[in-house]
Every structure is written in structure tokens, then in C-alpha cells.
View 1 (cartoon, rainbow, N blue to C red):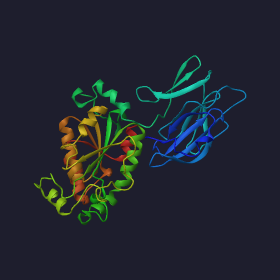
View 2 (spheres, rainbow, N blue to C red):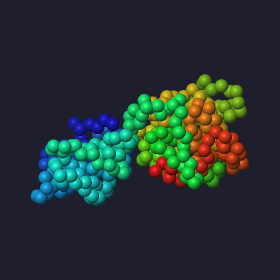
View 3 (tube, helix red, strand yellow):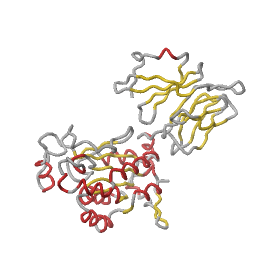
View 4 (cartoon, helix red, strand yellow):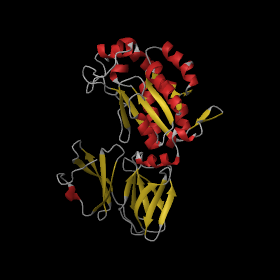
Length: 367
């Protein structure tokens, strides 16, 4: 994210700007002022300029304890952690003081680290403090890349997902979630394949809401989110017409780059830190960079969601199992053209290549 300070009005509001951080969606920039003992927040415009400056929190000082705003971080939920009198103060996204982390020395800076980025490190006058936390920063690809060197890929024969008394246990740092083909042409009224019945079955499955809810929970726990889109250029050059599905795609002028039909459905747009993979065949693996991303981030367990259940989702599950990945299919996060086709895939084919479950079970399994 690039932000232009020189052309931004209102920056003379500061006496001594110091710590700064972005909100998880990078739409807000927080800047604290050590002299004024406050935090201001700006809206970040699409061109990188700032607007709508306002005071987010003030009075970050004390006559009884040393400490002023200096280092500052935003966690995955949008809460602001800032050095302050007595240690670190934590504010909600609405500017409410949630609590204070007290240490016996003056704190100058802070950051999250550790194997799961759930340890808050505080640099102080004479010491560095390490404090376990239940939250961490927004997940970034580099946070999991180092784990791949430890043999997290499928060739290292890792342990399979745990099922105990019907409850799955999944390590978020080994998981990736695929959101496949949930594009307007595929499942929305007005899309190229609307007459197939796909929009009605998607509504019946509540697939958009279930996938959105699962993705939010997975993203917050450090699961890599990978959007897989079927995209062709105008005229579909390079698409081999060897099957009715591909013939129908060309005849319907579907999934054309830049069109409404090729865009992800509302509510499932990529977030900062997500990956996007484009394809021109049914399987998410065929001719794509999917496996490159999985290996680079050390992921060997795939939460497989999207449309259509008996086509792209099933093809992806079968190939993933052949490659040595553990495939997890939350069936209420998948849809196709009708319930008969969905149930046939879920109750028969998928049973041999994946763990078939539901969104709520996966959310609980991720901890």
C-alpha cells in the first residue's frame, strides 16, 4: 500500500507524528502523535491519498506513569495496540479503550511474532517482553512461508486431520481454503448459466453466506485463502472444445475477463493477503499456479469449496487426493445445478477422496 503524504491536506495537525498502522482492509491509516498524546485516523483513498482526518483516541498520557504514544500495531480484528503510560493500551475499532497491558518498564515499540504470530513482543528500557495473545496481525503470506522448509508439503507424510468423537481438529497453518468458481456467470441470476438451475441450488445451499462465513473465520486464524476463477479472453482462445461443458462456455460467451459474469459474486471478493488463481479447465490444478502457492506457504490440507459440486469441486478433490493433499469438503459450502447431482457427488464420489463435513465443523476444528 502506497500513501501520498506530500499531497495530503491536514498533516500539519501533528506536532510529532510517530507510530502508524493500517486497518486490516487498508482503508484506514492510524497515526499517533507523541507530543499531543493522541491517535488520528484517516480514510485511505483509491489513489493513495488521505482524507477525513479525525481524532481516534486522545488523552494517552498520565501524570503518575511514564509512557506516551510511540509504537503502534493493528490486530486482525482492527483493534489498535499502542505504547502508552504503564505499557500498552488497546482500543477497539470504534476508539473505545478495551484494556491495558502493563509492564514494569517504559515501552517504546511492539510487534507480533513467534511460530503462530500470537506472541506480542514489547521493547522497553532494559528488556524485551514476550506476552502470549489470543489475536495477532492480519495474516500475510510470509508468515507461513518459512514453515514449508520444515517439510509441511505432502511429500513429508504428515499426519492426517484428526477426527475425535466426530469433531475434526485442523492446524490452521497447514490449511488452505479454495473458493472456486463462485462467479456471477456460474451461480447468479442473469449469469450465463442461470437457466441450468445453478442460482436456485446456490440459494438452497446458502453457499455464498456459508463460504463467506467460513472464509472470515479461516482468514482470522491464518488459513491461506485462494480464490480460483475460470477466466477466458474474448472469444475464448485456447479453450479446447473437447467436452460439452467447454462448448457451452464458449456458446454462452461466459467468464470473459473484465465482464460482470467473470467477477466474483458480491461478498466473496478477495481480501488483502488472499491469493487469486485463474484457470481454463474444470480442475483448480490444471494449468494453474495453485500447487506453487501451496508449496510456498507450506499447506497440505485443503478446504475445498465452490461450484459446481460434481464438476470443479469434485475434480479438484480427486486430483488433490492423488497428489497427496488432505481434502476437506464442507458440503454446505458447495453447490451445483440441483440437489440430486450435489448429493450424488457428496454421498458417493467425494467419500473416497475427501473428508466430507460442514462449515460449522470446520470452523470449530480450526480452533
